[in-house]
Each structure stands twice: as C-alpha cells, then as structure tokens.
Amino acid sequence: MKLVLLILGLLIASTSAQIRTKGGTLIAKEGESLTLRCEVEDPSVAIIWRKNTEVVAVDDEILDTYGGYEISMEGSTSVLTIKRVEPINSANYSCALAEPEVSVTFVIKVQVKPLVVISPDTGVYHARVGEKNLVITCHVKEGNPKPGVVWTKQAAKLPEDIKREHGGARIVITEVKKHHAGKYNCLAENIAGSDRATIDIHVAEPLQGEREEKPWVKNEDTFIPVRKNQNASFWCTYDGTPVPQVEWLFNGYKINFNDEKFKKTSETAQRLNGYSKSTLTVGDISEEAFGDYACRISNKLGSVTAVVHVSGRPGPPQLSFDESELTWTVRAFDKILEYQLCHRLENADHFLPEDCNSVRVKKSDNNGDDKWTHTIDLSTFLEHGNKYHVQLKARNALGWGSMAKDALHVELQRIEKEEAKGASIISIISSILVTLVTMYLLF
Image (cartoon, rainbow, N blue to C red; front, side):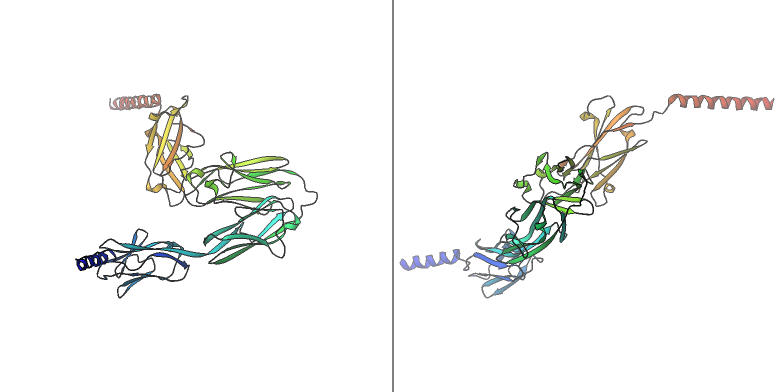
C-alpha cells in the first residue's frame, strides 16, 4: 500500500512541476545582451514566451520579429536571448507551457545611463546686471534608476544666492549680479553612468544713463493647438527698463510647479537682440492643463500681460464672407470630425439649437498640418434680404472647441422682384413695337 501511495505521489509531482527553472529579477544594462533560460521536464510540450501579455515566441519560432530576439533549444531548456537590451525591455517576461498551464516570470529591470540637456540650449546666455528671475533647467531626458542631478560652477563655489528647485534640477538667479558670470555644469548620475551639460553665463553691466521704460510683452498667437500627452511649448517676448520680472499664470493664477499637471513643466529665459524671450514647456500636457496661459511682465513702472489659449480641442475659427460664400479656418492637430454652423437674426439675443446645423468635414479641408479650411454657400441656410449673425465651432475626438472670437455679420442681397418685373414689361413692349413696325411696312 505504501508503495502504491509513493508511486501515486511521484506521478502527481511529475504532472504539476513541468518547469524546473525558477523565475526572479534580472538587472541588465542598456546595450548589453541578456539571456533567459527556461528548463522544462517535457520538451515535447509547446513552450510560450511572453513579454507582459504579448507573445514573443512559441517553441523555436519568433513571433515578435522587431524585438531583437533569438530563440533556441538546448536539450530540455528553451533559451530566449535579447540581442541588445533597450529601455523598452523593462518588463515581465514569462515562460509558459501550453499544457498544463504553468509559467515562471522573469522581472527585467534595465539600467539606463542618464542623458541631460540644459534649457535655454544656447550654450552661452547673455544676461544683464539687474535682470530678474533668470531660470536655467537641467532636463533629464533618459535615465534608470532615476538619476540624481547636481549643479556646480567651474573654478568656483556655486553662489549662495542661487536657489535650487525641482530636486536640484533647476537653478534660479533672483537678480543677476556680476559674480554670477561663469560656466555652470549640470551633472546627472546613476548606477549605469553619468552625463554632463554646460552653459556659460555672460553678465554685462547696465548701460549708463539708460532711460527707464515701461515693460512691453507680446506673443505671436492667441491660440496654440497641442497634442494630448505630448510636450507643449509657448513663449512671449518682452523688454523694459529696469529689467522686468517674468511670471506665468494658468487660468488667472500663478503656476504651481508642484501641481500634478505641471510637474513636468519648465520655464526658460533667453536674451536676444534688443529683447528677451520666456518659454514655458508643459511636459506630457493633459486635458486638465488645457486653458489660458498668461505671460506677465512687471517692473517698477508697471505690469503688462499677454495671454494665449492652449488646447488639444479645435481653436476658434477665423471666418470670412464673400457674396454668399462663408469660409473658415480652424486649427487642431487631431482630426476634425464635425463643424457646427449657427445663425440668428441680427436683432435676436441668442443662438437657438434649431438654428444650428451640422456641416460635414471634407478630405480636402486639411493638408496634413494643423489647419482645417472649409467653404459653404450660405444661401442653403439663410434667406435673402435678412441680416444675420453667424457663428461656428468644430469638434474632434477631445470635444467641441470654442466659437469664433466675434460673430460674423452677414446679409445675402435680395433679388429685386420689381426690377425683374420692370424688365419683363419692357421686353413685352419692345415685342409689340417690333410687331407694329413690321405690319406698317407690309401695308
């Protein structure tokens, strides 16, 4: 009886323990090769390799031909090789049997050397004594584990009046002074390696006898289309004497860089020929970050603001009218799905739902850029002789955009019936006269 139980136990163990290899966590460096081994008791059973939930290989056949994999069998061991490890290979790889359904998992963590860039990316930054809030940011573009970032100044100690923000990645000079001149290094380092970038700050004295001037600011656009979950950059140009201070606001409030939607946001400044430029970059912009961004420029003589609306939804249309044709242009990166044309009589107060019509998008509306242009004949929707206010908006996958900044005043010219009637009478009289003259000549 004991012998029967022992044999039965061995049979149960052999059917439940088909994979001899144990899983675990593997550390790999970017650019190296990595081999995963999966030993099975019965090599005749189909062996399936997965990356997370996607099938990479079955037995000796590679299904993911773009992943840089090799597969082979060494006796009863299936060997999956990643020829060149990339950051995308940080994933859970599993070796599974088709029957019975058993698997082991290898957690791969790829160590990636840091890659850094400095913004502004001019290499040399020209500042003036008295310039306010000079911001320089060290952007870590790559790196795993997350690198530490350190700013240093060549041949000198980092000035104590320089503030460090965003975990040391950003330095802020509240007011530029002569001792801030020099070369600054940004060093990012992790277990996989390090990277360094340098910016040279030149500081010039203010011009003697310089006349004080109120600040001015301008931007090129009032609307900027963006793609959701991608980086979005916008800027303003400005100047003034004394050197103005720059602040960015979102929907009327100063931007909080600790806010979740602005954690990947950076602000840079650049001195150009006769003016300065401030650039705000919102990393991986979300729908919550769509809205009005204001660049506020201030010095002791006053404050001015330039506002730009930033969104992934369609922007406000630009409308134009010629005779009976209405033409509009809408800016958006994501495909426009529909237009809505609304009209009301000039003395009406509101656009009613029944006075709005859907207009289909044509393939010819867009040439692959962010501009969508469409033309329609308004005589299809409006009566001749009446005065109307016309408005329009567009929709894409993210929703409806805003209407045009101002409603368009239009009037389709009335076809004068009296003129047509008079022309008809003249024609009849002419025919009668021709007939009379003809009869006179005959007799």
